[in-house]
Image 1 (spheres, rainbow, N blue to C red):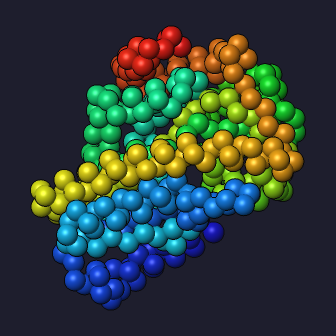
Image 2: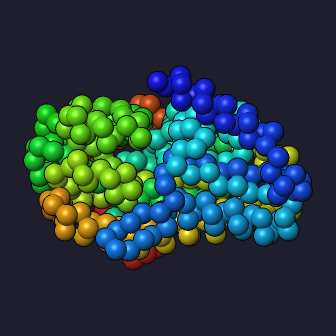
Image 3: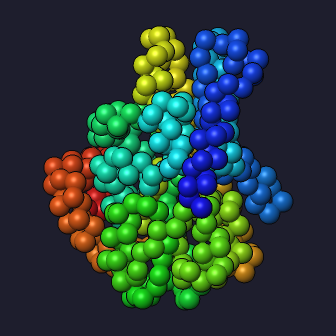
Length: 354
């Protein structure tokens, strides 16, 4: 199955490379941006642009405008060109110009990105933005360039992630014990799940619905809006909101492609990425609370964990992940990240959480 999808994705890319699009033919450069999700999400009777789609379209339109049409940008959603891992590999090889992964697929080639997934490390989104947009974030994302990836937008993958399961409400760390939990293909997430007493199981995003429906897994570690986008609430009984991991949705462009651009067009791409970052963050913040309310109104039991209850999860989940990161990445990058979080909290006038 995986090989079939890879072949189809490669075939689509090969076909597109020779496709006679007039806009592409008239431009000096082509920019294709991909994602696996549908462009809109329906929340009750309201229709929202999906945050990744909004980020992609903002990026594409701004690049075209700022380049004066010298770059022709195209957006491909709904997995048209394969899954995100396949797309990332194509970007790395310079076959595809851009894609929109979370930190999960990125960690396959750039393990250091996992440092941002220390559980319960960010008090809120404002702290995360301060860290991502500051000196630590600059240095972290600069390191991706050696792998052929240039992160030009740092949007949100639904912001803080949630737990969903079909066994029981998750209110304390012991409630996780024995559950088989889907995770992304990111070792730090798997270590977090193990620390909480559950068993991590990697399931590709487009297969999570069937895995929950058939009982292959008891539950899953999920993005809030993406859960609704994929209709996962239909196969979930319980959701827990505890702000355990803040997740990113990047726009990553091929470094090979980026280096073919003249300096003025490189700057247009970077500026468009910054605008797309803000677009994604805004769309996510608007949608998340409405999505959680929709879940509760449609039969899913939603539990919120905060304060002392959240501290109990932090005390159980963090030590194992921190040790794993220090052993696998380096003590230096972990310490630098923690310092960046503390500095951000201080700048924002917050009581330190670490």
